[in-house]
Image (cartoon, rainbow, N blue to C red; front, top):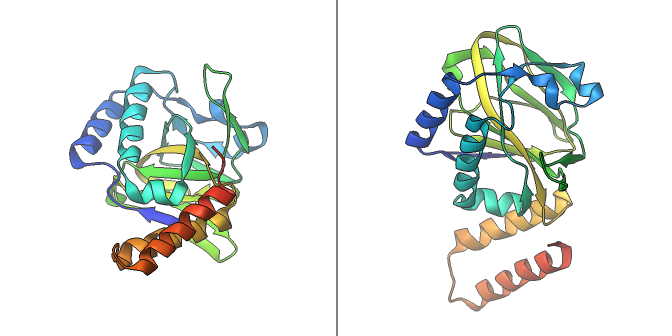
Length: 224
């Protein structure tokens, strides 16, 4: 499932992120890439243990917790600590697939990367190029969202970041281990949840039956 989630960050949160990142010290983005993907990766990244990364990562996690659309779509079990990157003119990231397992920094904990997320922090008019290109069974998708909006997509997807030709593309990115591992099952649950909400007939017996089906499917497919 490829899903655009608007307004993940409030305006004041977005301004705070941009202000902090404008003063940050960036490092070579290949520091967090695997051996193969490092050959295709040309960007800069905020050190994951820097004060800015810790503060802004916590801000993003709070924003995710209050976002009902994210919770419904991702059904998160674990969220990898958010990371931040920047693509300046001439930088890009060639086609790759995200690592299946990520070690959480400074812990013994590992997560399975079921869902990938990119939260855009630069406005589209601030840079040229820099589209997130995702390939799936339905074709190729080119994604460039307003600042504060986020895209979710299966971590199994082949994807790249197109070369930036003007300005700078700044974003937050991270991965989610879902309670429901299979993307097809998550998509069915998401569509069912949205349909129940859109019907809005909580006192109708059919609504109770549909809600029961939803929770029993989560019980069948979910892991906690």
